[in-house]
Image: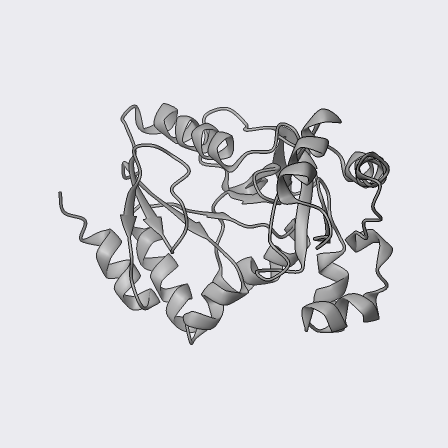
Length: 247
């Protein structure tokens, strides 16, 4: 295994920019042949990511719901020790909280701020289709949350009030302004992309017995202090950049 690792945000926007799934599949295959894992992070849930994984024939670990859970396919675990508990086809390391707690937390948060909050669980599939502009199947997958609850960002509540109230009741918020995105996300207090990155990298370092050289793919804040950022315009350039890494 190479002492390199690619960290990337995996979402619909990234896939749209890729133009062709075949190019991404080829890039991942090239990296896999070099022993370079691609670790994806998403605000979405496992059900939303699985079709992408199948299309791309991608078997590396991944992180869902804004750092709430780390999933490692059982048949493709690269680690000496399992990262998390066995749950069906995955080892799952839970950093956040169970979905039922997030749903209950949203109700408590609404009472705390004195303002109604509507989460994914309150929407019907057709309503979610309309709000997100997605297919019926995609809406069903978006509602299959395991650790967090997206909710409509209230315009009448100051962001700092919302964040403070969530922290006071033992939760975290991935905040989006109403202009950026209609939905913010209520997570368990332990959910953290930074912590997820650290755990994944530490697990890989135990296997390689060496420090990992980290590459970031995409335009997002680096969640790990020693990471280096690589900006590319296509999957083809991505694979070339990673494989031909130079100091």
